Image 1: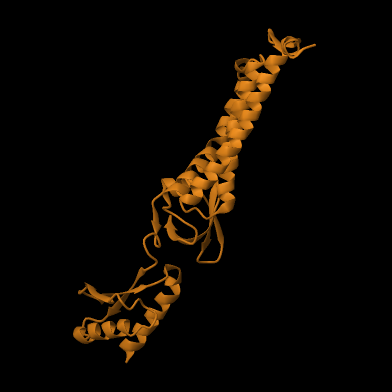
Image 2: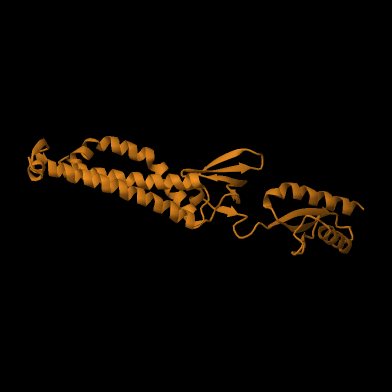
Length: 259
């Protein structure tokens, strides 16, 4: 039997389609080409994310594998259709199941897409200190579905990526790590306000841990009764230390005013 006869030999039938050796070989070639293309696509996705500055290798590999899986599923579907498998009937038979799965994976898909947007836009990166829904947290891991962050209470918070995209998020370290730290001080109206301002300014300037190239700020916020309120603000180089530095600033101001 020569090659042409082997390729034209009827092997079996599927859905009214006579599957020959040539048809089976065509389907096999489609699968092989699909696998090769999926591998190339996975490598390209990884390379693009790394060029964009993404540093989370596990997340990058997850997106690469997801892209590869999608291409393989499409390629296998084309190969099956080539040998006569009725994909329309197959999808119709699983329509109810697919509908249920669609609702189940809706949130997962949203989080995956949001994760890609976060990786590409670099609005939030590993190590950033952000505020979301009133909580200040530090980003410790960026996954394909969710981002892990550490709270000031040293607890791990799992944040869905879609929440980061859809919510108002303050990124304290997006442009630079400097953070404006402020406190309010109340003094009685009978106090010498000039001396109070001078004391507050000198105390803030003498803080060793503040950012030295940015001058402290002292504002009179409320000049009325029953208390006169001042705001004292300094700049620090790490927003994550804000609670500790706020305590230090309060203590320094308290001691200076008492003198």
